[in-house]
Length: 83
Image (cartoon, rainbow, N blue to C red; front, side, top):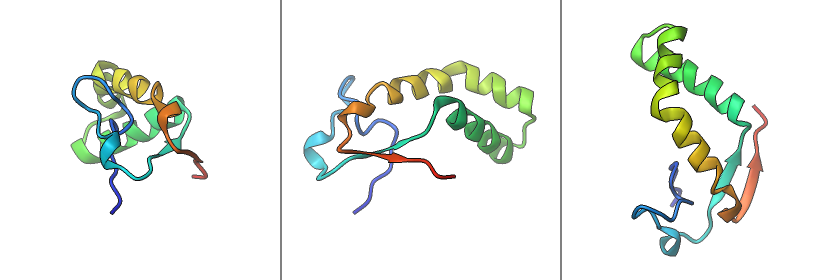
């Protein structure tokens, strides 16, 4: 089974699922690239413009992205982004 999720490596606040996983891989994408992609997804999903998407990202999205990247060392493997 393959499970995708932002907090699979996070072990605080009740998020520790490490005992349930055989392996955990981290898609290692520069934060700037990830946020650009998130902006495009917000625009497509919500039908909003770039400025509105950036405002949404400036809320909790950027903090969540930084938190997730801060736990990347717990991954069994880092997978580079080729897109």
